[in-house]
Image (cartoon, rainbow, N blue to C red; front, side):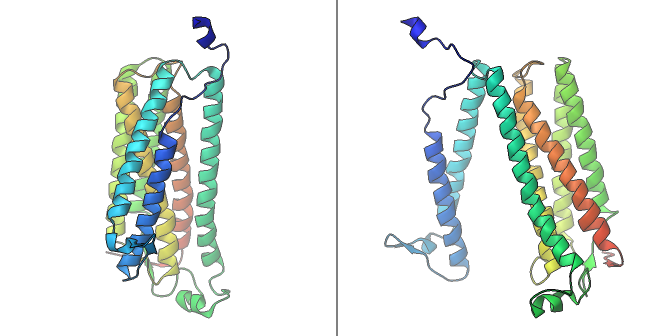
Length: 294
């Protein structure tokens, strides 16, 4: 009877799990709660199933977010457990790598949309189909009356920070391949610290930006592109922090460390996107513009 349950293949048949269903419920609550929250901010209503969800304000969204965070923790904990139990065979690991590559490719296209919006507004500021947009830009880029950030101040600091973090995560990877546990922990610790420092510098930059998101096509494209990148930095920092905790616990070996590889790939992707943002939105767009001095 025991032989009937022995696995004679390289594939992993996932055990029945409640987490996909729970994730769907959490996403539904976040969607309904988010819309209800926005409706309540403008004094509107969201009547569904005989109940005005707008009266719940942000509570529904908070419940959905809390449930989603718990599902993420529990689901990934199960995945880590499966990997440690040997369920992630070479074939399964190959497919996991394909999945991560496809995920990063989708993220590339996500940022292509924001670059597209930025270059459409900046390269053709006077050829908009709506007169209001031409009035916003004044036919020039940056728009008239806009003072831009000095690209060689805080943005340059953040560029150096991210380049250093790419170096430290690579150091940690090479240390792992050579079974140098102390080097892995040191490299990941520095990378996480640099990620936190980047986020703080960007927060400070946003707090002192001489333009706003609203009423400016420049501000809208700037904050959407750099803001989403900042969000990805936060996600990547958490990803690496989890890898750091696992490295301290001794989960990774030179032969088996897919999670660390995925985190490193994601972090290098974040680095490359920032270089394009810095070169285009900060440096190129500042040519001939008035630089803010405060």
